[in-house]
Image (cartoon, rainbow, N blue to C red; front, side, top):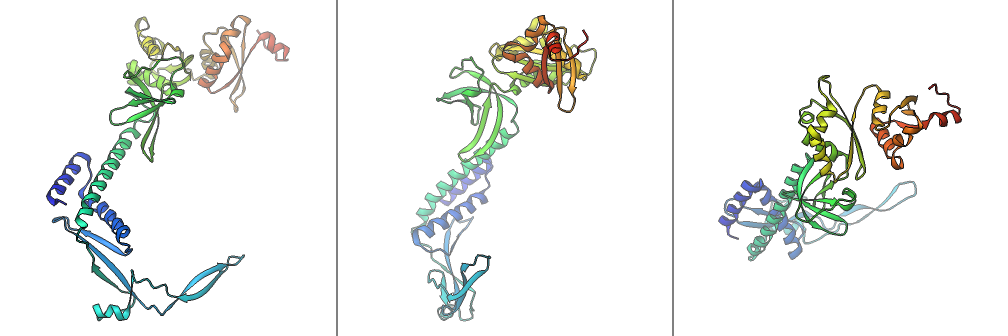
Length: 376
């Protein structure tokens, strides 16, 4: 192995990948130890690699024992957990043991329990070392890149990023995120949208994991968090904290309700989100493949908030029936019943998620039929 070339390579790895030379040397020594044990069948060895010269030395060490001694071993166990032991002859193995007589021929002052170390470096071990070094370096580069990607993207979980659609299979799209690829399952795209190979795409990072085969970055286009991040991107007042997003309730491809408010009474939170001639909200709708968006004004008064959340229904009355269970009775006139409930219950379902209340919508007549007395 060319020592100078190897050291130059380690310096380059330190500079470009942040892998310290000692990490490579220690990993190389462990790998060579494993290779020697496998090839030569000697279990008790250690390998030393000179950091300056690159010289490699293999040492075998044996423990001095008395082969005529006995050791106590557990041979069985009773039902109550008591161990049954017996004394057996010491399991002498000449690969790792020496008798005291043999040992004192080498070191006259040695005693039982001590070890003798002998160099056993094979003549052709440099060739093995070179091949092993290449494997170790490649492995450490992969580990470093994997850790760097995890470090970079772990802080981006629950954030929106831009990517390029790189590949597709039967279940997933694979999105190029620069240093790695993310997985966008086809179940996580907006229903009805068309995703083209090579196109730029905004995706929400829903999960980052350190998998066995490398970083696993799961992406989504139908997560409610994507809507929140798009609002932050397109509406400067939200990014600056002038307008706050209380919550988002979404059924991707159909409708989304976003509750916003401002602690500054001079700020029109809803108007700011819509933008001049609807330009801001239209950019968000376009990104979401035409998905309808209701911008709701959040109110600390839960009754008023529920009324706002049930928009576009009008003439809504709210009765909190159970504060602990967060349940409310909603009374509307016949003209607003279908608007309050929405197609297939979508409007009331989203309003319920947004307000964190179970909403039971009835007309005045339905309430009376069920014995609920509502004063109109």
